[in-house]
Image (cartoon, rainbow, N blue to C red; front, side, top):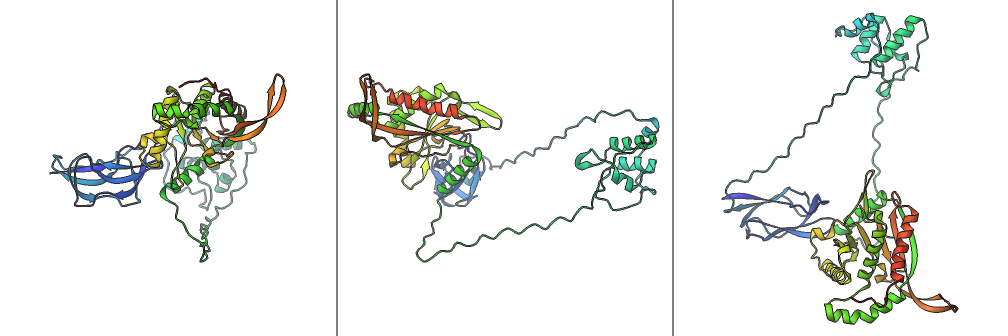
Length: 449
């Protein structure tokens, strides 16, 4: 009988750790192959970790709320299916590389000075250089040259250093010697003041305890709430958020959907909401402005080939998750409708898999579902843009016709585009929003699915 090490599996390319939320088995419990042993949560989704072998749980390595790195051993399972004792792998020790820096180009040095430079450095203190306390550091070579040339500590203090932290280098002292022999005035620098004693660390300000009256309620943030808070703060501190707003007349689109939604449901067994229609408009605009389908890594812009649309989905507990429709540009309207319904339903049931909330390249959030006219959404890192869709309202509008203008009732909505001004300027950000609006306004009422 051997021991099987149950490790935290890879949770996706960008996920390096997970939080242990619950043990499903206790020490001494019998486990069958593929049984879930522990539940974990990342900043994107909750999932469980199954065991690959049958056996008995003999050791738990972590407790609830511990953070576990991918590849770390969560538990030890004693199993007849393992032939040898499990041996934990040691992390390889990476030795730091030592790079040899070429010596700077040397100036021509007189022979008598070279004899000094090449002479062995004596460990004996230099008798004609008084031992005085100095804040500057002098290398043994500089001290050796100073000894041979009779340069006192006071003179050394006056030499302008060109080295790191104004240290006197070999070139500095050789130049000083040459100038002194030629009768010139060596360059001087004000005598360095003695180094001040390091100031004691200032005490951390003590945060005052919140004043809570008898009618106040203290609510602890949930684990997902904390992760969302960190993610949003990181985005605001990373991207330079700029917004562009545009109004779209979607009367024709509204009437088209009202006309076909019942037949669509009877034929496909799926509801046709506005979300897949909006996503099709965003895909159209991303093809026209592909820089919006990018991410910024340092000084490099990574323009994505695949169009993976994330759709912000509100959960029942007030939190938010962003499932991703992969290769959304390869789907027709029916495919988009089914993908939207499937992901949003499973998101609310907490049934998403880790890979279904990763690798998004652009995000859409339909805040109109909650009656909001508009908003300023926060970019979902590491993306560079996000589009918020406001509520569709009946509005009085001026309608232009060949026979003159008149006022009529139209259905309108506001699109709010947040984008990263580090690489997306106002012109492109506004043009992208207009491309989405134009696509929706010019909807063909005879379009069939």
